[in-house]
Image (cartoon, rainbow, N blue to C red; front, side, top):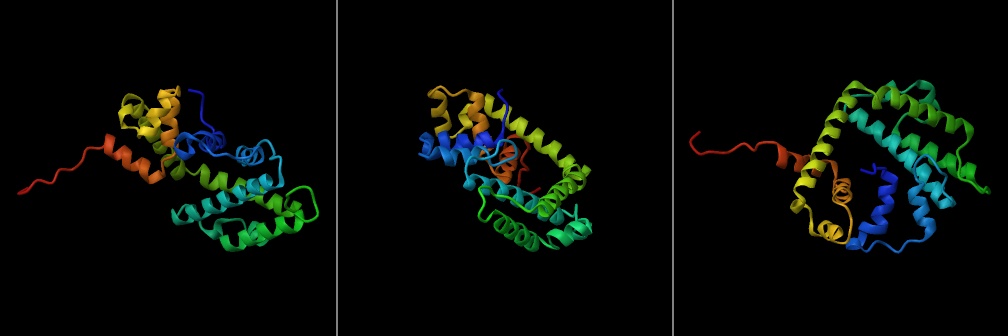
Length: 211
């Protein structure tokens, strides 16, 4: 109920969840940078714009590394023209993108890439959508991940006693069970979520002496 947007959850973390429910005393500018760090409304400060571009650079290169490790992609699969423009490895791409932003933002009231590099980044993102994000192998795992999160959500709604004490206190203070359960799951690492799912839904093998 109410949906879930990760940039709004990021703001909720610093406003409400940090310091055992007290939140952090952050300025409006920092909070604006957090909520505007993805696509959509531009951040109001140059620092926020830096974070926004850093996020784009980090996630696309991280996803390329993940796809290569998962044998979904190789560096040679990336179009040659994009590799010539951005670099032939993650290290080269990061170097190209970061230095390009620095050089093109000097003496300006905006943080930006050059048109050529920005176009290459957009084309690289399109390539990733077509070859990785929509890849049948990756999409198959996405279906499993979605089902896992849904089952964890409904499990915790029915077993609120399994939540840590600070989340129970939030409900005492007026937060809905749905919101608190979403907060708890959103704070899980991938591996922790898989571990809890296995604990709740998969039968454990018994070790019996003599068998």
